Image 1: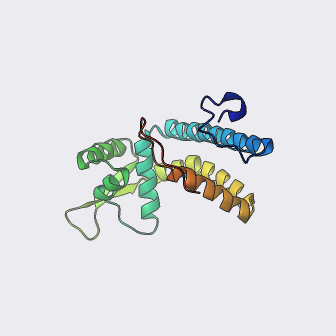
Image 2: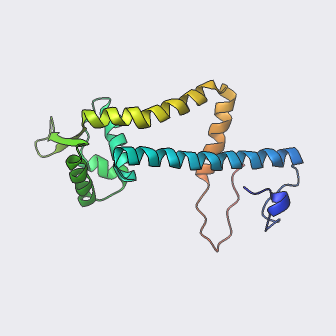
Image 3: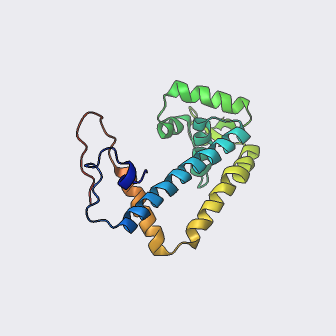
Amino acid sequence: MLDPRRFDASPELVARENLTDRDIDEIVDLFHALRLWHRASEAHSEASRRFMRLNENDMRAIRFVMATSRDGTVVTSTMLAEHLGITGPSVTKMLDRLERGGHIRREAHPTDRRALSIVVTETTRVTARDSVGRDHTRRFAIAARMTSEERRAATRFLEQLAALPILSHGEPAAEPAA
């Protein structure tokens, strides 16, 4: 976020009447940090995808199968299609590609003769753990060092950002909930 005191093209949009210069500095710093995190997160994800030779949806599929099957749930292509929000034929193409790449196996479903279960190969599981898992562990450690109050504040902030409706440009924006 650009400093609204210097670069606000629409001063009437950024309400800052009750804010001190220190408040505005902190808000600008917060959004700068958020932008840095977004860039770093994208770079980490891209590095993991490149290392594993997978695209973003492939990575999401692998993570879903690993996480869902951890508790013994049998993952099917229908479950995967629903999770990814893609069609049956698209998930079939993806699974064909992942199977050819040695990332997953299709096995007989233990209770439904008509279905196949999706299983991540041991090689891919270990590779994912050693790449994505290590990154996640480092992020978790940072959150663990924060106080409970800091974690709750960060969570509220991120949840409120995520809850903002997508603007239909050309229409007036709804005011964010306080």
